[in-house]
Image (cartoon, rainbow, N blue to C red; front, side):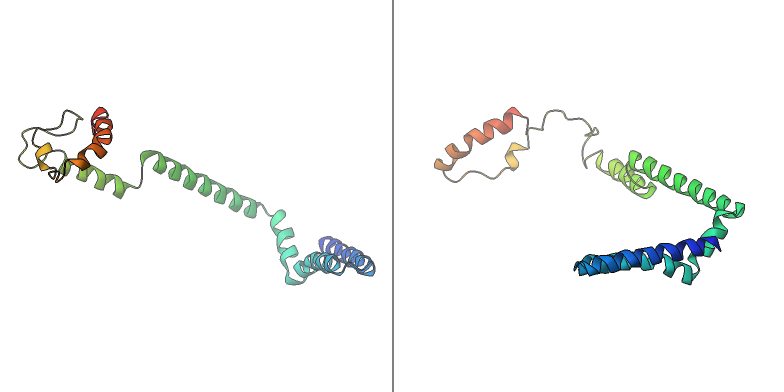
Length: 150
């Protein structure tokens, strides 16, 4: 009952301030103040204020807010752990399966997991250069790439 009275008084005061502001020819500001002033009385009329007053003094409601808080903390903790591990369980499972499939090349006698020297057959797979003049243009780039082992 007292909350409704306070909200009504706040709305009346806000509308009074809006009237004074409109009198000073600041109509846009007065309309904005009136909009804010009508919110408390609107909340009283819809029953939100009564619901909030009942909730504030209800131990069951506070226990419910506690349960919601625990659920939120659990949700955020699991999300943080999931990000730290690198994805969902399904994504990690697929990544492990892909790593097993690609660990040994077909026809290879040993796994190709390390970054060892490239096989000798790789340069033969490159297309042959057609003109000698274009070779000079890319010689610097090839030197840089060879320096970095690419």
